[in-house]
Image 1 (cartoon, rainbow, N blue to C red):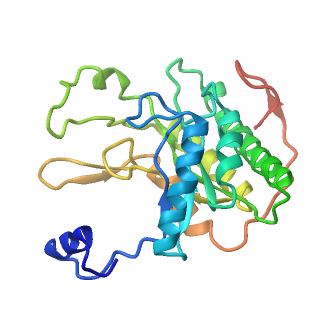
Image 2 (image 1 turned 90 degrees about the vertical axis):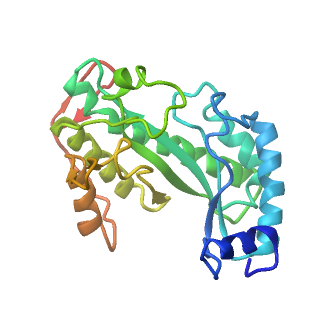
Length: 262
C-alpha cells in the first residue's frame, strides 16, 4: 500500500518510501502442526485461507498465494489435509506448500541416500491429490507446488536440547554438514528438476547459520558448507529447459526402500 494507512506509514518511518511489492504470499505456515501458534484443523484452515485470499486479492489482484500443505509427509493427517484444504480454497490459491527435512541419526548411508525417493513419492502424492480436487471441481485450473522448506537437519538436535529457553541469539540449529549430506541434497535438487512441471518454487528456507549452506563466526568470518556446492551447481546449471531422462541402472534394497537406483 503506497501510504496513508498505519502500516504503510510505519514502513515510511523506517526509511522505505515505496511498498516492497511482494507478489507471492504464503497463507500461514505449517498450520497442520500442533506445535504452531494458530494451529487449525484442515476444515478451519481451509475456510480461513479462502477468506484471507479474498481480502488480499481485493487489495492486489496480481499476487500469487500459497496454501499450507502438510508440514511433512509423515504427518498423520497427510494427504487428507491437502484434499480438505483444497476443497475450500482451490480457486483462491495458486500453490500448495510442502516441507521435508531428512537426517541420518542411525548412520545408515545406503538408506539415507535413498531418502530422496521418499521426497519423490511425497511430491507425486500431493500432485495426485491436487488433480483429484481439480477433477472433482471440474476446474480448468492447475495447482502448482511450492516446496518452501527442505534440507538435511539432524546434526544439531543434541546440542539444541541444551540451550537455555528464551536466550538471546542462541547458536541454534547449527548443523555442520558432511559429504554424505551434500550427496542427499544433490539428489533432492535433482528430484525438484524431475518435477519442474509442477514444483514451481523450492526454497532452502534458511541460508546462513541455521541448518544452512553458509556459516559465519563472530568477527566477520564466513565459510561454505558441503551442501553449498550442490545448491551452487543447481543454480548455475539447472536453468532453462528441464529434461526428463529415462535411466536404467543397477538397484539395491535398504532398510526402508526397495529398488533404489544407484
